[in-house]
Each structure stands twice: as C-alpha cells, then as structure tokens.
Length: 195
Image (cartoon, rainbow, N blue to C red; front, side, top):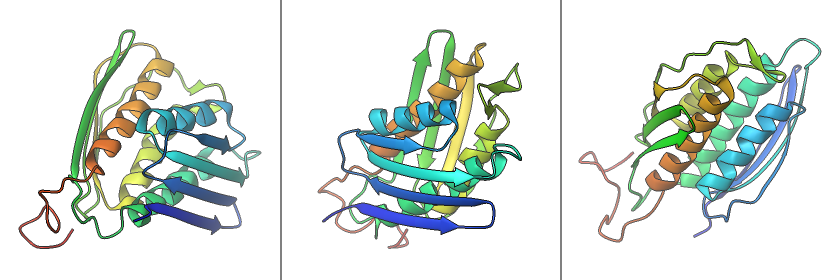
C-alpha cells in the first residue's frame, strides 16, 4: 500500500504544497525561500529516507514566522495522512544524534494524541534568515498537526547550527523507526484497538 500524502494550504500569509512519501529513498526538492530551513528539511528527508517535495511562499518581508510554522502544519498533516490507519507500524521511535559537540535526543509516539516537550537552547538569534526561536514553532506545529507525542531533548551543544541540524536529523530517524511495519503487529500497537 502506498504511504504517500499530498497536502496544500493557502492563507493570506502563505502558500504551501507538500508531497511526502514515507517509503522513499531520501530524495528532496525543497523551496521555501529560507536557505537554512531548506537545508534542514533536506536533512530530514535524507536521513529519514523520505521523499519530500515542499514548495512554499510566504510573507518573508514580515519575518520568517508564518512560513516556517505553516510548513510545519502541512508537513505534520502529510505525516498523519501518509501513516494512514497505522496498521502494523511500530508506533514508537527514538534516536540520539551527534554533530560535533551537539547531542540531541528525539523520541516520539504516533499515538493520535498531540503533546510536545522541548528543551533546546540557543545562543544566537538566527542561523542565516532562520530565527532560532522558530525551531520550537516548527516542531510544535508538526507534532500537533500529526497528532504525535514528540520530545526533543538537548543533551549537549554550543553551536546553534549543529543543535538545530541534530534536531532535524534525530526527528527524521525517530519518525522512520516509528513508521516501520512489523508483521507481528496484526492491527495497531494499542490495547485500545486504535491509534
């Protein structure tokens, strides 16, 4: 069964189109107008082995907030749609990813209930035109739109680029793990019978 989703979102502030394939090979075509954000999303696709196409335009003359948050909303919707009924998926995923001095843990549960815990800390206001405060807003939007429990914990880190990149890579690896199927799981991995 194909686990692919295509989602569009149009507002007065942004225009977002996302095509997401859970069972890809890491191919990405990303155009958001924010170079650092494009780099992070490319890392997410490559390290999660997802195929991802994001075409996004927004009111960057205001700031980067609306565009980054809305990409998070649409990507989260795409993750939820691509996962479908979640039959036979492992549900849980986690990864600890290093990049030089930075070490970030991501753990998630595709439980159908959004919850977000985040403790990344930054020393600069921006990486390129990506405001470091927007890292939290992006992952919050993804977690709530995907209806996942998402934890991001900073175990060490000084360089903001490294910290953010580790967060995107650890999220990719954890999501890839959680969406893998296991033939032993006949329906969904829940005593309730649904996720």
